[in-house]
Length: 230
Ligand code: SF4
Image 1 (cartoon, rainbow, N blue to C red):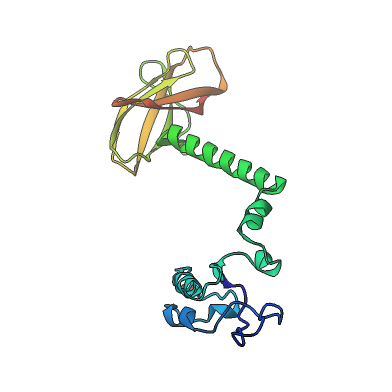
Image 2 (cartoon, helix red, strand yellow):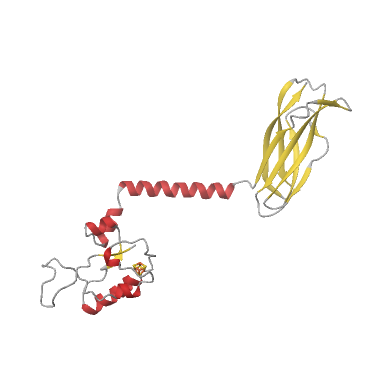
């Protein structure tokens, strides 16, 4: 943010203006003329300022011409302006334990975020057991449970997925074992899992859907579900 150090105009050339408590501003008005938003930055920080620095450049050129120090209008903070800090004091004020701690935390958060984005699996899977279809016995001495699989491909490329199932002896999928999902798309599939009736288990048994992209081996997800054995 640009801000004026002082807007008090210098009175007479012969006058010791600093001793009189006056500033370096010679009221040339160049900062107001060049400002694209039409504000007078000598009145302090204002929300209209877009930080273009045109007033800083204009003022520095005038200060060069009259032989005063540059930086009458400069990027600064309210606190630094109030305490009349120079550049070195502002930098020294920045190097404080709290600022260093916040910086370390910010860098750590940035690194963790970047790492999690880099290693994320661009596939999400929801497994919903069909509660409308109870476990039922089908041909071949098998018990069948029905599930809806929602595959969300969050990658920018389409993928072909193979759907596997495990967790119980003899468990297998009855029909659908593959799916093609377009980039940034979701696909819902209704699949039937079947287990031999003499499997030995009873009640609510844990099983796992293992979904992996055949064209990108790193994309693989294992989702837990339950199989109801009557
Ligand atoms: S930085 Fe740009 S917008 Fe802000 S006061 Fe200076 S000239 Fe105006």
